[in-house]
Amino acid sequence: QVHLVQSGGGLVQAGGSLSLSCVVSGSTFDFYAVAWFRQAPGKEREGVASISNGDRSTHYADSVKGRFTISRDKVKNTAYLQMNSLKTEDTAVYYCATEHMTAGQTTEVMGGHIFGSWGQGTQVTVSS
Image (cartoon, rainbow, N blue to C red; front, side):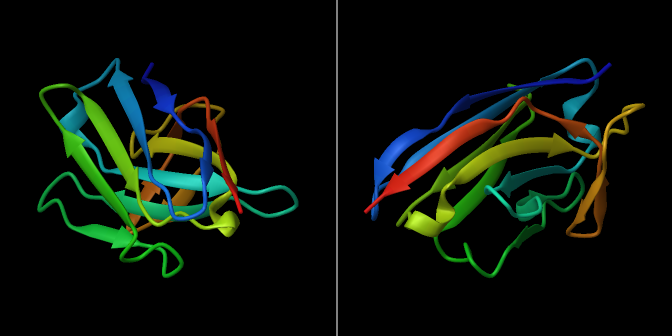
């Protein structure tokens, strides 16, 4: 199975920055697109950013465009989400995901890819 282990997150003041990391094991990392999603209380899971495995094209939710940057390092099998100029509405649990399908796991679509393997999630809280 594909395993995704996240790190980062925490509490930050509005206007500050945080960086999230996601280490992928169990498959060839560069075969799959990678994405970050988030879910706030009472809301559905929302796609934040994605990056393809081929041309490395990126897609961002309008709400984070210009503030967040997704990247990947195939040597380290790691995906990153750099979050700048954070707002209180960015508060959510953030999940990394890969295109690899895993039995029994939910799927979400972003940037023309279907994501079906998920990290454990990490809380990001932005205070005013």
